[in-house]
Amino acid sequence: MSGPVRSAYDELIAAKELRPDPAQERAVAALDRLASTFGNAGGILARLFGSPSKGPAGVYLWGGVGRGKSMLMDLAFAHIDVHPKRRVHFHEFMLETHARLRRVRERSEDDPIEPVAQEIAEEARLLCFDEMQVTNPADAMILSRLFGKLIDEGVRVVTTSNRPPSDLYKDGLNRDLFLPFIDMIRGRMLIVPVNGPVDYRLERLTGVEVWHVPNGPKATAALSHAFFQLTDYPVEDRAKVPAEDIDVGGGRTLHVPKSLKGVAVFSFKRLCAEPRGASDYLAIARRFHTVIIVGIPVITPDMRNEAARFVTLIDALYEHKVKLLAAADAEPDGLYPSGDGSFEFQRTISRLEEMRSAEYLAEGHGVTA
Image (tube, rainbow, N blue to C red; front, side, top):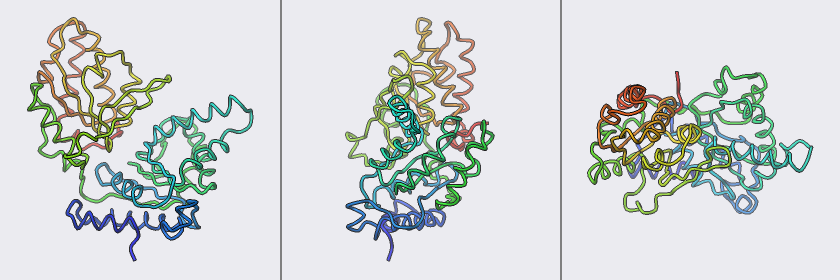
């Protein structure tokens, strides 16, 4: 008898929305094994209490970009019948966690990890994290203890990453303090490489024009088509595409008008005509693997602030290997013909041209030299 994730996966195969992929099928089996720990994969006790039985504490899916890791995690989230549950980008979860830790420290001198873990466990019996990557010592210091407590509280975890566990926080400051977290993943979670030969995301970008000139109905229609192609979202539900507010630090948030499966849509005006800084653009680059920008104008000399913000934005996207699709009133080399900083803008032109190349589009999100 197949589990809930396998049943959903087989339905997608039968509908020809997916093709058989042995690497994905191994992940499906692991996810169903995790589902079974919730008491008959969704029986009465699981629905009432979300109490897992003995078995793996989670599933760690890792592999190259575009291999279907997020899709598999979404299937697990949708079809493992346990409540409450939560799906969240890993970076966003860690920002929330640090805020929780600060609040606990303000009212008590005791160790804040345990009460924060209990708080999170009350909100979700199943946690699904997209794109686990550890880049700073603050996250590295707390992960092992926090996740150990969460698992002890009965929380089960599904996470995706471009890296195997052994490469997390590689060469990071005081990495020896992080090694217990890697040991915990190895000892308590099912680790499944999802590294099939097909890059489905790149396949979907094949033949897609990424820079459209000029702005207008034709460019908008082409980018809309690309958005639905990248996200597998039903075109007939275009009015229901979700928005999102992301934390950009300093207690500020940035509204994302369209946000789905790691793809975001913005206007140039929202990103570069409003007061923005590097932290805004870094938050975007970390959160999304693909960004669509509409309404990029030819930048005139009196728009030096917009030009400077655009340079910072493109730097952040480029450094994090974010895929950029855009509608503009000129090709990159005609965007800022004169004005303060037009000489420095030449680097941005070079990067925009490189971001259109097949080599750049094949790079994994967040992978930097």
